[in-house]
Image (cartoon, rainbow, N blue to C red; front, side):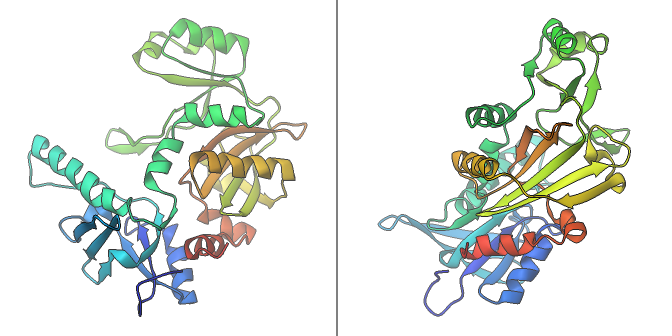
Amino acid sequence: MSAAAGNQPVVLVVTGADDVTADPVIAELNRRGTCEVARVDPGDFPHDVAMSASLDVERGRWGGQLTTPSRTIELAEVAAVYWRRPTPHKFPGLDDQDAEFAKVQAREGFGGVLASLPGCRYVNHPHRNWAAEYKPSQLTVAAELGFTMPPTLITSDPDAARAFARKHSPAIYRPLRVTALMRDGRPQAMWTQRVEPEDLDETVAGTAHMFQAEVVGKVADLRVTVVGNQVFCVRIESSDGRLDWRSDYDTLKYEVVDLPHALITKLKEYLRRFGLSFGCFDFGVSDDGTPYFLECNPNGQWAWMQPPTGLPMTEAFADALEGTQ
């Protein structure tokens, strides 16, 4: 890792204070002692975090300082950024209009500089994450690469939705993107669910919805975490055969499995197409062993799988940030 003369390179971990997935990566980098690790949450800017960055026009590089309550970071020494789960900017003392203006300026200025550090390794670059989260783009690239996939419909037309559900029964509904949903002041999760034609009323016309054919005879799921050149595949089965394994982790059992070389090649090419160095892929496995591509989360969770599997995923992330793989 390169750095300014006489100083260790800096790995910037951009995330909230309570991000337990980032914690083991920070601990591993600190254990190795090859870099300085700084945790920064954009949500703390500008109240507890400050930044002053100036552009060297001749070199096309941002320089200056990022200051947290515990340290000062030279932007020129940041060699890698682990972009995890930053919290939103907050301006509680302003009215709604002024707060929205301030949030946009903070995101474009503070976030824009952190996304524009030349020669920096990003796991992943925030703009790449954003582009890779769109389900239609994911499915397009997966189809181009020849992944086996279920028939899919995105529509706001109730008649089209009902016709699809009749043709591909059993059909399922998946949210195009998961958002914070509150009911009576309590957070609600939106899991994948089966739908019948009679379930689909005129409310479908209210927005876009994604429907897919259910993987026939699905017996398990695969969660494949790709970090740089390293691939970790875990077969997930629930004791009660539930449709969406995320709805109850206590029912799950895990098994480390190997993937065919041809599928690994496709996974890496998928990430290359989106400019990503990391992604969490989900597949449904049919009873004949065929893996069906469902989605790729460019900033997915992975740390919970380490204890039951023993897979060295933390070390893989540290390698990617150090640039040693």
